[in-house]
Length: 358
Image (cartoon, rainbow, N blue to C red; front, side, top):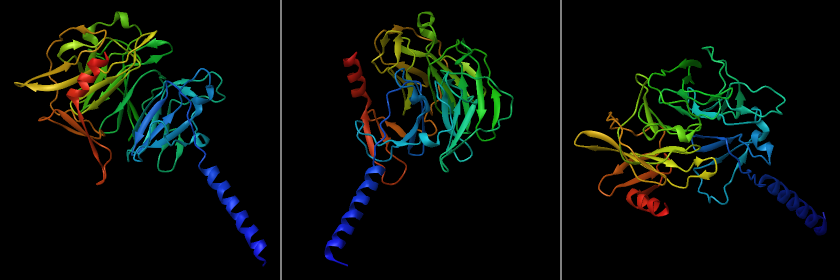
């Protein structure tokens, strides 16, 4: 074999290798959207569906990013799973992680696109171990499709779905899906919040916390801002709130960080977006439990009737550790392994920064 031929052969292999690498590293860049679901399972954040008036194809997109890998928010590495997506185009659905091994994505309800060629089922599951979709058979007889609602899941794999919209009717009932035994149930509506959609909700130590969200902000009283559902007996109650209650909003998110429930962004009317982060803190003062609200814009002052708040509010699945009482900071773990790092956030500085922004 001549040296010239060998050189050409090596060059050909290099070209093929570069071509293969180029094909494998083509980046998937998601289009902006709203009304999608975001489900964290292990270290992967799965994004499904949504709506963009200029790009209807986003309703069919399915992708994830590995949050255990350091990344820059301006250049996130997304992994496209759209080719294996079995869910028709949709938006405004609800999702949680659940199942016997807590590694299954459960998708409920949503608004199917009008141009879908197939009928959208009520519930879908995605097995993250086999990367496969399925339509589960669920006992209990529920056929109610809802949209624009939030799902939470408790320590026992039960998925809670409050309110939402069904056939253009806003509701205030509670559907319960057992993701392990695949069975529907219904929760109590006694003393339940008024019918509402696009609210914020989170799970804290066997409690369902619901924050605002409605179809008419003008008709929502300040004292209706926060409701708690005790999942042990399914009783709704309104906790005592001191301080200035943040103004009504919807399309926001509620997250628990240590003893704090942080409400992020949202809309305060149909033409104005909220830019502040109201924070509610559960504290214990002389054995009297209360929730204090840090002021934000368009706020009211209203003190609600005193009712107990549980001391232990560290929720299942939260990658957080308790607040450090000496310096009023919180440590957030970046993972569950021994190499996990912790980032300390000074909540007093956070509060001051928020107030300055307002």
